[in-house]
Image (cartoon, rainbow, N blue to C red):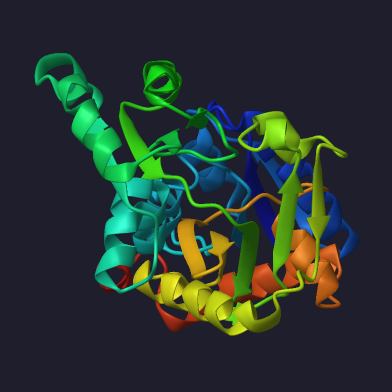
Length: 322
């Protein structure tokens, strides 16, 4: 089968995406597929129209690849693709929108406040920081509303640290999220077709807790898989599945949460989680007895199944997803 692997792009997560894509290419090649590597750019549609792959494996992280943009193009071209559909991508890429969906569905998520650069520049949002800080308490986690890999995330232990954290977050997105910090264990639950894989616990060094490099440099973060959840296992799996449903996921995804003494608090969901050698979805799949090659094959199978169930790119299919 001819499979286009979409990777790279021009976003801030380009290097992680290239690593994910290269690993996928090796796996698909070893399975006998004809692999078409595509470093996504302005010629994407023209390349796809000339090459006419039978499926696309989306290994494109962040805006453009994880927000429904490339998925919409693939639907127009009637090319089945891996990962969630447009609806889930649109809902999950924006952490603020996702938290509203989670709260509406009764999924526990830390309290938050959010505003955009326009509100900050022209409407005096900065003058509301005192009320935000009073309502959420310290410490705070300040992060861009969109994006992943801990890019732009800052920990503000007190009011003096908030301005610097806001500047960092605004450098990555024009909307920021200020979130109540909750203490507990960092747990990630990956799901394939709505079935949870073994949970992964991340144990970064304290100084690396919100550090981009710590997520991708071997040795900077310790991982335990399967995580020993004990009595928390039921609530953790329930929170992951309810998040999956609330955001409209299918195919696969990853739900990140903090497990406190009072139960799980969902932070976000990832529509196109990393597939590098330090990424959590492949780690969870391996713990479940699934090799990386088999994981890639399964994700491709799900893409083709969805394509058969509803004609990809048709008006009806697009309406159903949105």
